Length: 71
Image 1 (cartoon, rainbow, N blue to C red):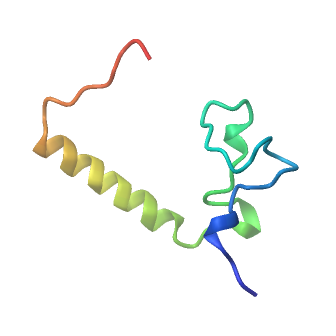
Image 2 (cartoon, helix red, strand yellow):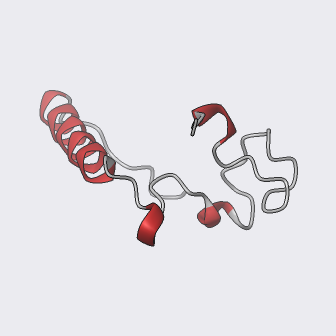
């Protein structure tokens, strides 16, 4: 079995114009980045922990960062 990251989330049956990045598409929440149930990504928790550490480190190093409130 071979898995390719190049084809993840490119299902034409799910996404219109699947090759185009569009985070605002109406069904963007149906992506399969970490999977669900039997297809859950075993590295998902590690990725979440890495992201948490990265954001904590970033906000410690650059304390003046702020979210844009009107978006």
